[in-house]
Image (cartoon, rainbow, N blue to C red; front, side):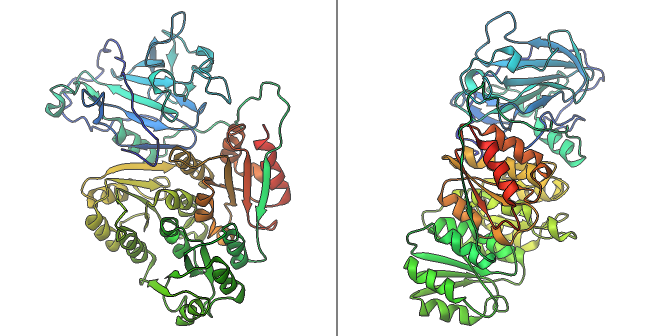
Length: 541
């Protein structure tokens, strides 16, 4: 079950794709995981997992496709060139499975795109009609080229109770795999996931259209609530985020000079209901000690080495009324992320079935933290540990803890350019063959939107969103647990020039009527007043 991505990706009926096209190449295909050359079928931020073989219909069928989750109205593109040989809901009632396009590919395979949109923008009214499902000019017998825009992501038919997604299916009459020879399997259906991963790895992903957002139907806009949480520096910004709480039994203290500890600690803070507070290598600042006293904290986690957080931090916490202090430390961020996972797993009420995997270091300093930061609210909400990895190989401490914990799902945060497909596969293998998913987009902003959509599907988004700059991390180190406390997703923006993050602006505009408030984290030096005003305007409804 992909709990963190959707409440229930259950499809009651899976449509047949029609007649099989004549194969272009002879020869039997014997492996349903065969990789074929396709373009990724959705532009913009997405999330997807290897859900081929999942039970459907209480075990009477198998899900022999890949569900690609995305925001409603994102563009669907042809994975391969061919001719539209089936299209539903035009001059006929929409069938039970919703709006669907089948492309008979030039390669002899059939490509099915199911549950396309049936709503008018900004609603879930089911009144959009085929013009809101299909791109202009898409009809039966029309030729489409690889990568061409053909429709919109939606939740039509029996997917109405699920998160918006594209049910993407590939039929190949040459596929004869003995593993799918008997019911509830259906022969001849490839697993799209390996081919989708290969497309992402080589950058064969269509560009997202500019702009975005729901149409407002001529209504007068209603101003969204906008507030800013900030302090004079990163320590006081974390303090301001903590001040949203009236009390906390536990606090989590991390070093101010590094991003890894704070982001790794986010799910632990979410688990114990703690704010994340920052400290210098000289000890706890007086205002932080005062906040610990105000909260009435009796327990504390200190996450970091002694050279980052000296023993005086523990003394300062004790002086502020904390009775029990536990330090979690390791020689490097990878081992530290494994140590935090073990601490989370030690709680008796935790079922550790899902972990997030994010980049831990990069030759480009500004590349090492955005994906983990974007994941921090989701992790704090779901209690899913954040494990850090190198982009080209899986660190030994991370592989070891995956083998110990054996989570059933590993979700990579970031594209294949950040974390290679081979690294993702190694993580899933270390976890005993865990289901593998990826939340990614072509930029850090696209990735943050994909994570935000996953967060909303997991229960975040009760009316608000937290927004932080994508340029630097200090002001947002403590933002993830604070956002989770408010049941809000966290997205990144270009804080200096809002147009520099089109994926986020398009997503914010699409939330009109869905998210009524925005909390900007950090001062005007990192998220300008003009940017904040622009965010407010995007959410006006």
